Every structure is written in structure tokens, then in C-alpha cells.
Image 1 (cartoon, rainbow, N blue to C red):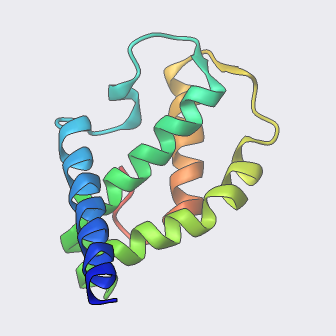
Image 2 (image 1 turned 180 degrees about the vertical axis):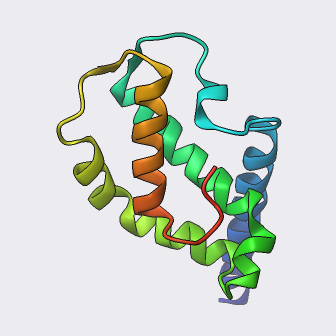
Length: 124
């Protein structure tokens, strides 16, 4: 039983490290989600995945801000994961299949991050 419990800790630690590495590597130099989009129109299904990844990145990128609000990065990620489905339905239910411009992308990005990450000063 001890070996099994130790394996779980290793898996959880590995997952945390992988999430942190993803956050820092995939979005180095990214200030808004539009920095990750090379061409338009943007397929809505791809955009939803990008937004989920970007929101995770915002939790890691703003660790100091979260701590000042008494929120840990893991709590931010947990909140994001809990609200993902609800916010996708709320924000994207009437969205077009493709986003045609940077203005549309920024608008949907703002709505999604505000819904999934209701913390002050961490929206990118």
C-alpha cells in the first residue's frame, strides 16, 4: 500500500511539473491569446482548446497576484477546471464556427477568462 501511495504522489508531482513547464514554454512571450494565433479565421473548436490552455497559463503567470488574494495556483487551476464546461456553454453557445478577426478573438477570450478565472488583476 505504501508503494501505491508513493506512486500517486509521484504522478501528481509529475503532473504539476508538466503543467508548469507547459505554462512557461508554450506561452513564453505571450501577452494576449492573439499572440498564439498565426492566421484567421480561427476554428472555434481549436480556439476553445487554446483558451483552456491559455487560462491555465494565466494561473501560473500570475502566481504572485493570486497569493496576494490568498489563492494558490492549484486552487486557480481547480476553479478553472470546475467552471470550464459551464463557461464554454455560456460564452460560446452563440459563437460562430470561425472567428474572423483579432477583435472577435479578444472579445471571446476576455469573456472566457472572466468567467473561468474570477480573480482580480490576472486577466491577460
